[in-house]
Image 1 (tube, helix red, strand yellow):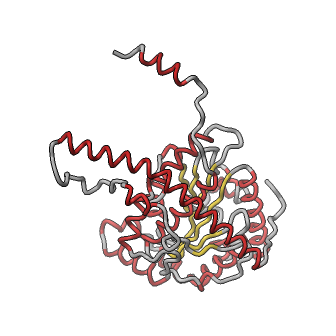
Image 2 (image 1 turned 45 degrees about the horizontal axis):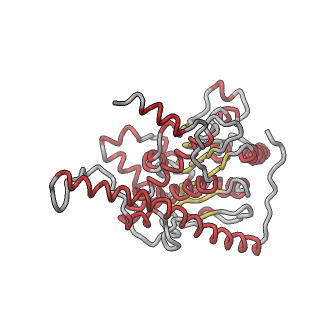
Image 3 (image 1 turned 120 degrees about the vertical axis):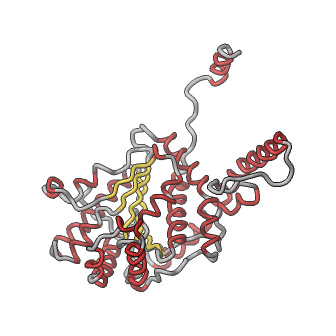
Length: 364
């Protein structure tokens, strides 16, 4: 494990210049993503027309209510968010000194649409995310020193972590993703350093690892309930920063998300679980007990984010009172992470033409 804590730096001017550069890079990436999908859209349009001709039907064809909208030339552009359509959430810099409670959990930063628009955007960008994930797996799986992604999802109870797993992470090929939901440590795990059980689930090259709760529980709930003193909490902050620097140096892009929900919204979601028999299994009486510590949790999050939002592993606070917005915001973060890696399809290590001839020889 690396032992040197990543120093926080950067003036306001440097941040401004960095944002300008990122803005230009963003436009370039958007154009590339749009161009890459136009070809796929045209193919699907052609196939759709051919199918209609073969069936001898004119007008509209029957479509399953569960099927996803066809990607057309017109809708392909919606997969690529414009400057007014990019759900950015609240991205914290390495020198962030704010308060979590100053960030509106019902806001929709970077996105001017409503719930319907957000749901459409989520579906329209599924194909882009799936394609990038498959490229990552194809290009780096089994490759020593290959690239990978770690998505850390933190949040209070009912903040929507499960929805992120189903609606965002669930859009990609399961063989390229490892999801770990960290619960209270077992007696065996308690005998080791708090990062011991975390290390076993970091992503291998070519994969996306997702933490549903994570090593941050050891500086959040432990601070709130006094299970660790201030000196120990500070030691853990430093250990976390060194750990994430180590992951980055090994080729892992670390994406950290706090799903920020309000106390009022959490109360309504808990009440829904009590009102509905099909939701009782999700309810834990302890959730009500933890609500009594709400302010302490917000303070614990503020301190943790200040101490561990670094240049290599910055935090993003995602407003989570609107589930649909939280999902497109996390989807956007994953798309950006994969685009920065820019995985390419591996070049064939065999003579393609020769193999085609061999295959033809076995066909009628």
